[in-house]
Amino acid sequence: MPRPANIRYISPSEWSVGLLNMLTALWEVSVRVIHHFLREADIENLKPCVMEGLANKGIFMCIILVTKQN
Image (cartoon, rainbow, N blue to C red; front, side, top):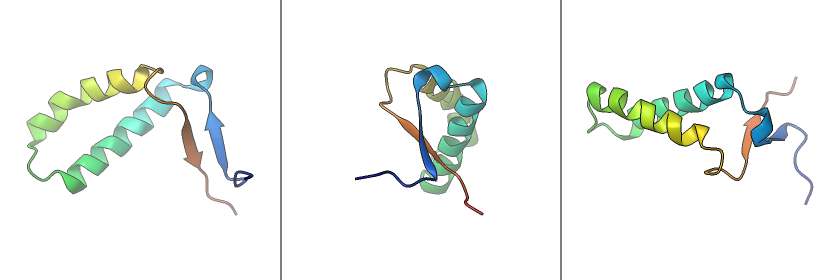
């Protein structure tokens, strides 16, 4: 099955600090929406662990970015 043209696999060699920051921001927004029981301090304390986990490229098999088509 062919992949849609607007989804691209990003290999670990292409990962950057910007991508890790975007993924961390996505994690943070998701946590704030779903995990109401977490305090601000909890989220801030978890952020470095999340960033470290994201930076460990062995954790993810692939990451995709969906871009808006014009």
